[in-house]
Length: 137
Image (cartoon, rainbow, N blue to C red; front, top):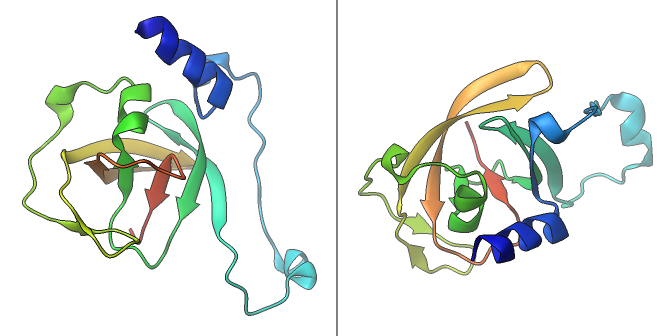
């Protein structure tokens, strides 16, 4: 089972331990970047963030979401211990309008450029399009 998971990790390339990274490229936006953007627009912002000392790609930034959401598969890839999960009585409303009961909440360090914050993530069992969803925080 571990070999299959390792092959999936390598194939998808979604989560990489930082010690395997040689250089991290910083992305910054300024007003000149808006010259090529037709506003208003509804394009999603998808970035890479460092979470729990791992580089996580395909992170959807969704300011319309009231919670940070971590699919169970990302939780497993990050090799976070189940003991770190805290119980929650909250329910989430999915994109499809269905209610989703979180497995639990975990607090992890998230780094974007030079900023590092402790963020809470609701861990849910879903089939994700993204590795993380960062909501208002």
